[in-house]
Amino acid sequence: MANMNFGGISEQVVTRDEFSLERAKDVLKDKCICVLGYGVQGPAQALNLRDQGFNVVVGQRKGTKTWEKAIRDGWVPGKTLFELEEAAKKGQIWLFLLSDAGQIKLWPKLKPFLSEGKTLCFSHGFGLTYNDQTNILPPSNVDVVLVAPKGSGTSVRRHFLEGKGINASYAIDQDFTGKAWDKAVAIGMGVGAGYLFETSFKKEVFSDLTGERGVLMGALAGMMEAQYNVLRANGHSPSEAFNETVEELTQSLMPLVAENGMDWMFANTSTTAQRGALDWRHRFREASMPVFMELYDKVVSGEEARITIEANQYPDYRKGLEFELNEIAESEMWQAGKQVRSLRPENNKDFSDKLKMDPVLNN
Ligand SMILES: NC(=O)c1ccc[n+]([C@@H]2O[C@H](COP(=O)([O-])OP(=O)(O)OC[C@H]3O[C@@H](n4cnc5c(N)ncnc54)[C@H](OP(=O)(O)O)[C@@H]3O)[C@@H](O)[C@H]2O)c1
Image (tube, rainbow, N blue to C red):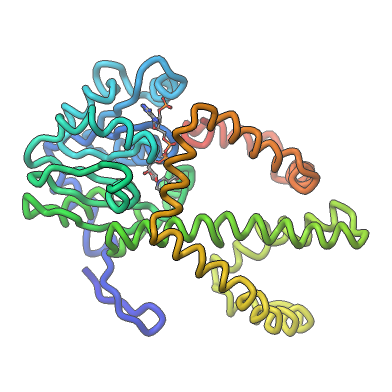
């Protein structure tokens, strides 16, 4: 582990320099890794591990579109692709990548196959942290770890194929074999993490639920809608409102912020934009702070988990979800976005042909 300075605070992290791929392979040699679930994270982690030479099998319920997709990705039924129980039996290292609701449902069926000395690896702290609601209680004679890529499965695969990595957090909840740390870090390197930083199951889920409900998705979508609506209400065209709200952010500014940080962005914009953004930043921070505080409290109290678990239990949840997503898709703002995207010069045939070649990006 390396001790590094993050904004004046010292943190222990693991980089590829300290923990090489060769070391990861050595830690997991002769171990069968089973990837249970082939939704969004499943394919990315399974394919990255397979491409890096680890011994991987996939567990997925049969007779589904997902099963067919796994076959298209090169997993062979009876050899590297099995029903969930069969894969769980074979796997010494479980990457538990069913949806969080699926984990709750399948846990009683799969638990008997989690025999002594095996490793249970989550990509989210949800199942364990809220175990009063999920009933996921691992036996005491196994290792329980977490490796959580800080990005969607699509990015985990895309970055890997581009020779980049997605940073991931890791945590050790139970170290039965005395080797849990090595295994967690080896899994992290195997799935193609950039650098790994330490967390706990609780901290992972508290930050993750806050992040996705907040800046990463919920707050971002809400702020975009608010700004777009104000511009439209004041007579700006959809093209103008969308470009000023979304397109410029995603296509121009965020890649630069990703490369150089926000201070660089502020320094390298017009003085007009700079002055205004520096002033208004404080207003937006103060206005949103109480909402973030309420959100964090609801995550910690388990209220957000309760809402999620309950919603997933409704038999017509998918139908309702489709309705909600459609509402976004059909809105003027995102219809305008579709049109704007289609006008990007790079959306030509050569570019889309390149994307078509990768299994994960085209599921
Ligand atoms: N999405 C991400 O990018 C992301 C990022 C970081 C961490 N994570 C974590 O990674 C884990 C997996 O997330 P995900 O987004 O990849 O999940 P997902 O796409 O929703 O995973 C769906 C998988 O679970 C299976 N499944 C769901 N319900 C089932 C049931 N009742 N019986 C049998 N199989 C069932 C699905 O099979 P069918 O297709 O047959 O339904 C599919 O294989 C979660 O813990 C999540 O929090 C996800």
